[in-house]
Amino acid sequence: GAVVSQHPSWVICKSGTSVKIECRSLDFQATTMFWYRQFPKQSLMLMATSNEGSKATYEQGVEKDKFLINHASLTLSTLTVTSAHPEDSSFYICSARADSGSSETQYFGPGTRLLVL
Amino acid sequence: GESVGLHLPTLSVQEGDNSIINCAYSNSASDYFIWYKQESGKGPQFIIDIRSNMDKRQGQRVTVLLNKTVKHLSLQIAATQPGDSAVYFCAENSRGGKLIFGQGTELSVKP
Image (cartoon, rainbow over all chains, first blue to last red; front, top):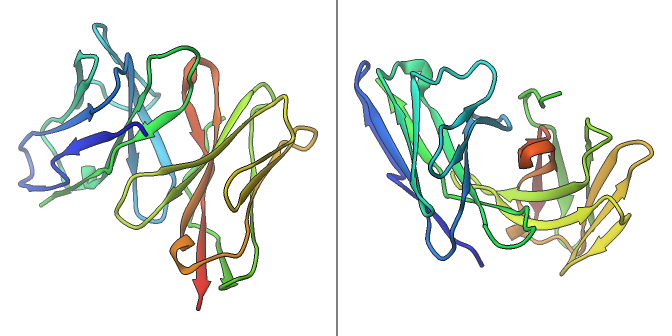
């Protein structure tokens, strides 16, 4: 099946620093990738939709200048949390949608746990 | 509208019993639905999907039922095993291919 990886799997950083999270589709091309945030015991909340070669589309309430998304190739999207603060501590998960035919299935990465001190 | 994060409801079953997890979706125009399983500290794992032109679909030990009249989705797991313990989310595919997730149900399987 389709495999999506994320790096790093966990990160601890100081308040005010920036953190970059990578999402890669390993065995398929993904024109579209999605970034989600999940707090403990809660559901996944979509942050933004990342399209290769164009600007990301952010969900209402998500600051685009704080959560920078770059979709540089058909297999890589990055999320940078700029000037991170403790309230940004969360589980960040990406997903990728295969490019072939009419497939709508999203395959999820293993997630990145961010802790901001 | 978007699903709002709430504390997870839980379902506790005995090993070997059947489990039924329910989900209500919000958009009557949604035409594709997916069930995901999420283990602690991991990303969601695809279980089974169903399109709106069907009302039932079966996989290995799992069955998804769709009732469009009342906008209800259910996941049935046969002969539940300890390895099935996880949080289960339903998701509906909205316009533009965005997934809207339900609040999730935590399944606990007692040996």
